[in-house]
Amino acid sequence: MKACSLWLLMVFFSFIRSASTRFGFHVHSYTVNRWFKSVSMCKELKTRGVRLTLPAQSSVDLSSQQQQEWTEILRATVTALKDGQVVAVPTDTIYGLACVAQDSAAVRRVYDIKGRNGDKPLAICVGEIQDIYRFCSVSVKEELLRDLLPGPVTLVLERSSTLNGDLNPFTKLIGVRIPDHPFMRRLCQMCGEPLALTSANVSTQASTVAASEFEDLWPSLAIVVDGGPIGDKSRLGSTVVDLSVCGRYRIIRPGCALSATVQVLEGKYGLLEDPVNQ
Image (cartoon, one colour):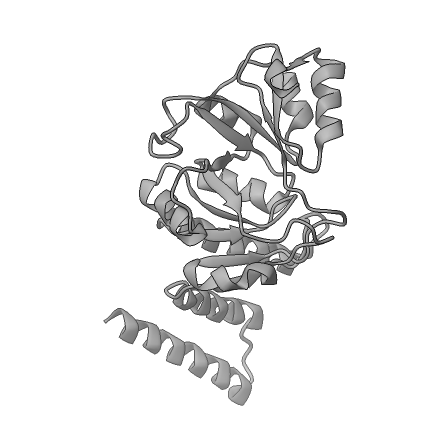
């Protein structure tokens, strides 16, 4: 019945479009075209590996039509995430696989796609600094968080009981990110809950990374958001730093922002490097 109704609506719009040409009355082509595009996107979302291309890396100074495209892609991605699906997204470092962190089945799906046995932790991604306090126990000043985030840094903190217990159940810690990427920040804000995030198996040695580099994973994903090539230098991923011990820090992964991160931690806030790392 739904398929029949959709078909009748498409026939109706086709008739209106042809009639406007034949009899001379005006129909706003953008509205009709946008409706057909939305119908097409909804149909595609029932399959796997739908590739949606962002019109630009930044939402600044986009035309109204580009802004509309951004909004449509965001809405489609949010729908897929809330439906328990896994999506590929651009970040400020490399492409990542994301799902809703509070959805245990979706988290297991990420591990299946990555071919992991579940012993490697996933980070979470949020949209705002205040969201960190919902899912983590924070032992550093808020100013420190704001000096490092948003940016290519993952902060490892003690997790709170609010976070899904099936996410990294083998550790009391959780890595949290706020990528400095307008699409990712808006996506997290629209979802209203944390996203579990891991790399999309791209090479970390290339000067730039692109969605095509993990094309073999597309059939396992609901949506691939193609933000174009990322980066203009060696992509080492985010710098991962453990801040779970008060007054100290420990570098877990140097990543692409090591020197700047250490300068903030030691130079501005006087944190000491954990002796375990020395």
